[in-house]
Image 1 (cartoon, rainbow, N blue to C red):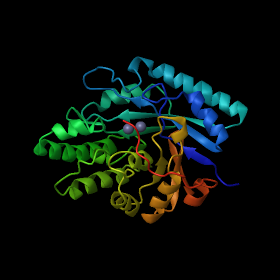
Image 2: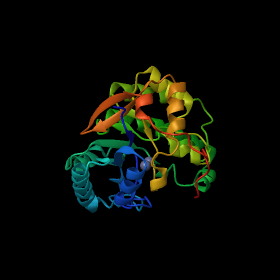
Image 3: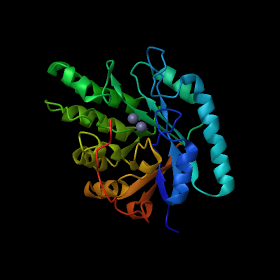
Length: 289
Ligand SMILES: [Zn+2]
Ligand SMILES: [Zn+2]
């Protein structure tokens, strides 16, 4: 039996998504999705304050319980399998607090992200990047990759989100970061983390999926497992550009796609993982901001 489509990095109204888990499930039923993972944002911020784009930390238990209940319902119904995930921010030095928050619950997978570097939110706006002086901009790029290495080494996560996120608005590093990037990829390989091809980047000003083809080649060369992610904030984006992402993975030399359950990874040949998927009609249109 061919495997069914799976999509794991997705947001709902529990954090900054536009649609509910139920909306996503009904879309999946209409589009032959075998596994739907929900991974709303968790930010155990060093300031102790909840972030407006993340699940309020006091609500994490309610979020988890709601997903577990829906997953049990789906199992009864026999439709799309629901996987219980979370996208948690990595803040260096705050590993213990993050671990404590995550450790209260059982997850199918935990996605690790770096959205904030030295107090600067790298994916917030082009205007914020434009205001930075060039030296500070370069510092942020460099520190980002240091944090990515820390994320890999801390042992809290299963998947690395949008690994080259600072390119989002097109403010690319001006110095050679290859040693830092290699260091992060080595740490990711050592920790057996999975890297995602995140298709949302094709719809941002950088007009490129995360990661670039070159970094993806570095992942494949290190035998790092890869999964396809839409980072969907709307139901109609749950499989966005997966066809193109699979092609990018082949271009990088990859042959298989990772799937998740109960914090274990298994692998499928690319063709099985995307069986039945058609090319997007209107690839890579720019999202609204
Ligand atoms: Zn993210
Ligand atoms: Zn996300």
